[in-house]
Image 1: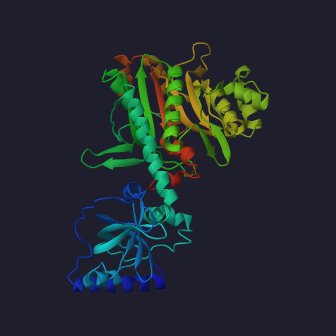
Image 2: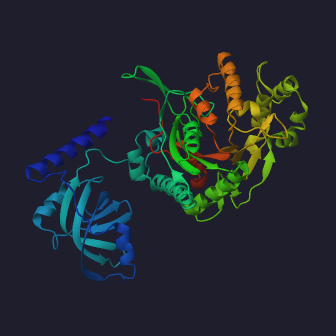
Image 3: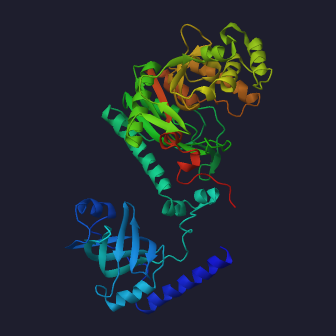
Length: 489
């Protein structure tokens, strides 16, 4: 705090002591409310200007504005605002003395009768004031708010107090998650929980966080994906449809679309393939959009986006050829590497054919996919857990859904051949030995589970954070995560 903050805090501490000196606990236990502000507004919507009622209510919230030496207060709760009128005709002397010890930011409870002022403001005539929490620090100045964007993320509680848009964004996130959960439950999916601490960091290509368990004296990894545990449950027959809304952790860089910990929805359904996951992706995102925005036409960054299903299906190779004129399907690995390098992708001499196709797609196609599209035909080289394409063994039955140039969903026809899976893991282990920290390690227990029989199935992952960004027109992932990861000051 600066010197001015110190002096303001000193004044508030003095008021705190004055309350205690009068036998008032400035941090009491509880205050039973009769109503929230929004409920009162709805109940008395027809009350005409200047009318009074005999209805007594109990409301509570934070003081956000004081006028006429505290005669009028704006009291905000989670639902909205109600005006409080404090006058000696209604308040006893002891409560008038309490009023003089109040500041903007304090939390109070009010009991009184409802009226509407001649100017049309719904108001509670206070008959009793109760201090619920004396605020010792002043809120940011009303008209400038939190100009420091870093401070908004570091002190999210202040951001939420003073910025209604921030509250609305996080409330919409909650609504999106609830909608996805409700839709899946109605479709017969069983919600499950799988470990966050893994002995092997598998299920995705990513660099993990590592920690140590003292009692067992072993290193453990924070989950990078729940995939392998979820498919173990499918092997066990817990359900033919199951899902998890999960926190994952990846020890990678930060960006407007990346946070080291993030939330995803991951689900599996037996006896279907990845095409069924396309339809489900469209259903889920469309339902989330309707819940969060009221429709399927959204705007992000000034771009109008139509989420109305069905969405186009385009192969990665076809999109790259359309953008560059290069048919990667006609090239061997060396020619594909050279072509990708000419397009601006940096690939080493040992990069595989699939890495070259993916790099060309990222360099020349990805950020152009503004409207929803399912990109199919992913290379086998970058998809160690997906079933091979029967028509072209270089490819797999996998798609990623792109909106506004971002991947928001990823799905496979899941690989259930244990011998093929072991071979894929061995290739990944060779890549790890060559220095690829994100290559997947061999998970012997997972391969053993496959040897007991995993039914043919489709799997789908949807990034909750990016989906929320799209549906709230938020420019940064930090806007949609209540407490994003920040470097300490």
